[in-house]
Image (cartoon, rainbow, N blue to C red; front, side, top):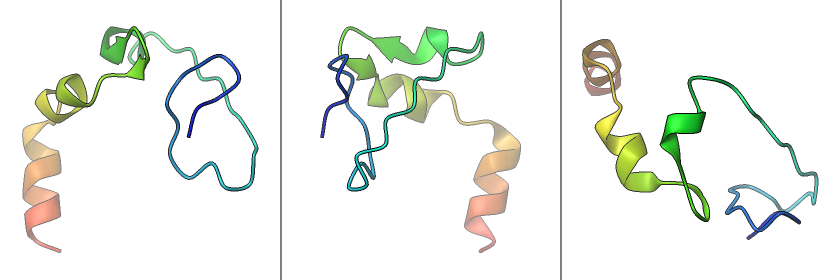
Length: 54
């Protein structure tokens, strides 16, 4: 699903669109919204350990 600005969104079945502009999120944006390859490369070591223990 895409927001009115054309950005790819997830979980948009309620049709509520949020626009989040933060300094830590901007480097992860691509031309069509969040870049999934950048997101997967931005995982911190503590996040990996936590997700493996669940």
